[in-house]
Image (cartoon, rainbow, N blue to C red; front, side, top):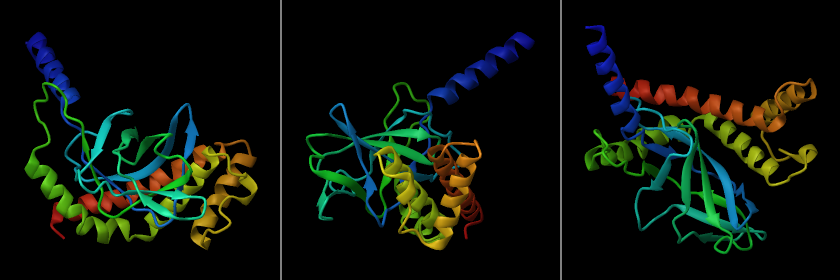
Length: 237
């Protein structure tokens, strides 16, 4: 009996392991996020939130594609501040669970760009998995996308916590791109500045380094807001 149960649990675990992970949505950015270019590729880390509590979180490296082939929702920003729509689909992979992805663009495409901007309502769909017992259906994707562009806009994107999270993410990308730590966040509003200074203090006392702290605080803020989104979905509010 124990052997039968063990085999059943192992099979269930294997099925879960190959099932499609959560749909996630990119958080739109008001300000450009700095790109870091090396070895022929320009990258940035972008903030996301989860649209499907019932599915498993993506593993680091899980490939995603933006929903809507005709409107990728990204623009490159040059040193003068001009924005040019990105017409090449970037490579997008999960960085940490459902709260962050890494976006990569060929250096030739991003030539001259110093940053990238994310537009409203960009939903990310996981790349199909061979033999998936529970793939993302077109209905699931359509429903989640509709909710992201209505309830998600109101409860997540417009929340004050996410505004702070986006500032912290922008600072983290600037650090990765080589920004001066002393001038980092000079344009931040008071609530974002307070978190930045707390991270500076922690780093000065030998705690987490500034980059790790900024990402950790940002991730925690997004996770808190995401819980409110899930609760609203569960109650139909």
